[in-house]
Image (cartoon, rainbow, N blue to C red):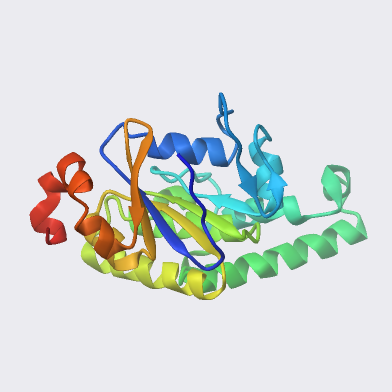
Length: 237
């Protein structure tokens, strides 16, 4: 497989269960090391780098099941995502040195701003584990945004959401696109995919079988046979 995600583009990665979509995400953000090939991001070869190193370059990530610190507040979860931007270090934080205190206050303000951006400011002091699924997904995006990503990997963000929650998430994704963030989306809800995507890449058993606009993918016979045939009524094929 070979593909490019451009600045301000929403590209969706779709395919049957087991096609390799999440594996592709894990290779991109360093959870898995590829056996061969190359991953390039923003003129950097990031092949084999650690998730922390890749995040520092500007790659953010959410997961199929939100991975939040359930016992921490919503605000604290975002501050954790912001921590890689801090310069004071662990020792400065532990000793509450003046520079570290100033930096933490700045991190707290940015985190508040991000909570407001995803319309969760009212839940700032709520434990993340107590939030409903839709709000957990929004919080996880806010935490990813705390690292100021240029590329955001969204793994099944609409999974488990009702129609109202999906609409809220759709508006958020479009806002991020408007800010120039590149978005790579894995999602099984094909109505959501067709509505949101600038381009779509289709995988099957780890192999790229098609790439194009939503209209091109809907009419691609091979894609219909492999994946969309069973979803025809839902995607209008």
